[in-house]
Amino acid sequence: MSTVLVFLEAKSDEPTRLSLEALAAGVRLAAETGSQLAAAMVGAASASGFAMLGGAAQIYAISHPLLARYTADGFTAAYAQLIAKLQPDFVLFPHSYEVRDFVPRLATRLTRVLLSDVIGFEVASGQVTADKVTFTRQLFQGKLNGHYRAASPAPVLASVQAGAFRADSPSATTATVETFTPELDAATIRTQPGEPFRAAAQTVDLGSAPLIVSVGRGIKDEANIAIVKELADALGAELAASRPICDAGWLPMERQVGSSGQTVAPKMYLAVGISGAIQHLVGMKASQCVIAINKDENAPIFEIADYGIVGDLFEVVPALTAAVRKAKG
Amino acid sequence: MKIIVAIKQVPERDARIRIDSSGKWIALDDIEFRMNESDAYALEEALLLREAHGGEVIVLSAGPERVGQTIREALAKGADRGIHILSDSLASYDALGVARLMAAAIRDEAADLILTGLQSDDLGLGQTGVILAELLAIPHSSLILKIEKTDTGIRVLRELEDGWFQQIEMPTPALLTIQSGNTRLRYATLMGIKKAKTKELRSVEAASLGVDAVPSVTLDSVALPSRQKSTQMLTGSPAEAAAKLVEKLQQEVRVL
Ligand SMILES: Cc1cc2nc3c(=O)[nH]c(=O)nc-3n(C[C@H](O)[C@H](O)[C@H](O)COP(=O)(O)OP(=O)(O)OC[C@H]3O[C@@H](n4cnc5c(N)ncnc54)[C@H](O)[C@@H]3O)c2cc1C
Ligand SMILES: Nc1ncnc2c1ncn2[C@@H]1O[C@H](COP(=O)(O)O)[C@@H](O)[C@H]1O
Image (cartoon, rainbow over all chains, first blue to last red; front, top):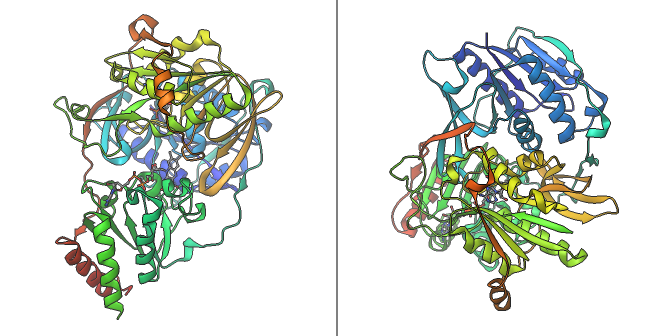
């Protein structure tokens, strides 16, 4: 019987949301390919937290003192050994920063290529071999989808994009947890990671703002930010931005929304001149109402917007500010 | 320090996305090309390191003839020389194949540091640099914002999720994949553009590098994404669209 192996991650011994989504993808892939599902993760304490999640019959807790802190060299060696032992047909990962960091190296060691950041898959009916599954991933920052297939024998490695699969609710079945101790040699771990730290204290809390107006690279120039600020003021909204605006220093980094910035869920999120790359979307997808103003009718932001205006922001934004002021009297 | 920077030429950000007749890629005939965004930051980091510590900056790019322009642009910004892996059919290689070509072209350079962008703006694989590190059997770190030289190697600043960071110490030779945005990019000066014309740009045919082109993943087809959500488009003149939106904000979203 073929095996789908899902690698999971935990923070403070709690499974990450992204891991639960990867597990959900694994449950579906196993069902559709008639495979058994196994899961694995580093750390025994976190593994027992996963045992309740169901789906997987077997969970491997990868355990070794040299894995106490993440390093690409340590994780690559450990995961490669577990894959060699289990011989899975499919290996799924959450597309996290750690996975981005070491899984391409792991895949290379197996002479495979990771199908990175996939948003879906389709199994040809009646077929179970690894090369009969088509994986979809985004190209051109979400403007195009690509359909990929493995051209080499198992294992097929894929990482799952945030938000692409709905995390399942815990099931009643409990998995058995087995400890897997890889053979690791301290001399092969070449990087010395420091303790993670946060940038300077935040002074704005976008997370609790009910209304947000967010500006992107469509604004073109620092001086133009003023027209979006006026709209935000008229609405009584907080001003936020996509990453390039904060990178350029046009707004402080604490106003950045996205995977490397803040996560927000306001009642209204108005995106002005923002294309809607996944790294931005993960930070604002949970907003109750998304409105987008963009000159490109095919901008990915419209895929998640409730209301859209296709047009030149330099015309639409001042018109909107005037209309809001008028409505407020 | 001898530093190699891998630079990819990609379609302009605002390029119109039209699927070509093969159904496997976009039509490129009326498209302008530019340097991949994170690669421009990788080049900037390399130039700053050379300015601080001396050495040489070599740019490396794989692709058809037109890629030469992007290499010249990097030379005009201050890189010392270029290596062009010439191929009209790079799309027939997967990320491992492209990284193998790059490894074969630079192995003899024995660079101290290899920088790549974090991710290409067209394929967005986010992998080629890390694969190259494994092929060259050197350590790597990804999502890097800052590089400092130390007595034994380098200290780098790595971006983590949600506004967290981490410092990592590592020996050289090493490979780093660079995240966009941490520095200001320089412009090429007129003098730089002039000088670039005389700098060495060596072309190597991909086929001469002895790399197995059989891919382990293939891109079968591309398609425009389908809408997940039914967006209500508000049309009309800017004033009309604005008035419609205000009405929605009052009556449906109830925030006005
Ligand atoms: C690891 C990683 C982490 C990242 N983290 C984040 C993050 O936390 N937050 C984030 O935002 N990004 C992040 N990014 C970057 C992300 O991938 C995108 O590059 C970024 O979100 C693009 O910003 P943008 O939409 O403002 O710019 P672009 O993608 O350049 O879009 C500009 C938009 O403006 C429109 N436009 C242009 N002119 C006009 C006009 N006159 N009127 C109306 N519309 C106009 C264009 O049609 C286009 O859609 C990250 C990337 C990586 C790889
Ligand atoms: N054809 C290429 N030529 C030079 N560098 C490349 C090429 N393809 C990828 N790279 C490098 O690898 C990085 C990551 O690309 P990707 O894995 O496609 O996201 C890019 O930012 C470049 O630095």
